[in-house]
Image (cartoon, rainbow, N blue to C red; front, top):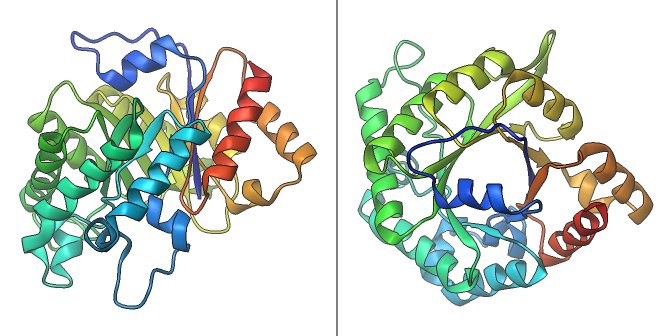
Length: 301
């Protein structure tokens, strides 16, 4: 999978400008790389291993993948910390590894990133807060703070809150980040699906409402992760642009990686707009697709 971020000229200012926001103001073209393990082995790591385990089992390969993305043109690197939150680790009775997995994930990203910024990845918990589920909001918020605190201590330049299907959970995560580090840039990637009135979250919140709520919460950029098999970045980009002045972040589907050069260039031209900043990342995409996007964006400059 691949992410695309488009920066609009929002003119939004804060007392403290984070590193990512500052970079958005300085550069017209940015590429953000994805998680290294899926890029190396697809979404099927060896039996008995999860992607985050590679931080400890194969650290040199994580660094190599990161360095390859930067060499291909990536400006932002996502840490290999998806699945390293308390609730995900608790399912395998591994909560005691939370600090080590997150700290090492950031350190490896930093080793391969060079001058690129490192974005700490925090996934949805996989549990539902009251009244949707049985877990108190205070417990979920504490889990977010715990992971974010380790990422910040390890030196991330921004945080990406991903696979958020519930707006309320995303809001809890945003508040947790701000409590740990009020000046840290925050990307939020909601899980969207098409609805009768445009895109909506998995729990039926319309894109416009979610954008307004998270914009008021102070996030740096807002994006969408479509469900598998949905390659709809252009349509979602339109919804996000109409909904708020936040820079939209979009997931590009597998079809982009497999597109012929002429179709690839045409689709990139259709999606991009003059004066916008584009960030792309690939979940299973290696440096080749990142380099291809870098060349395409350079041609559009």
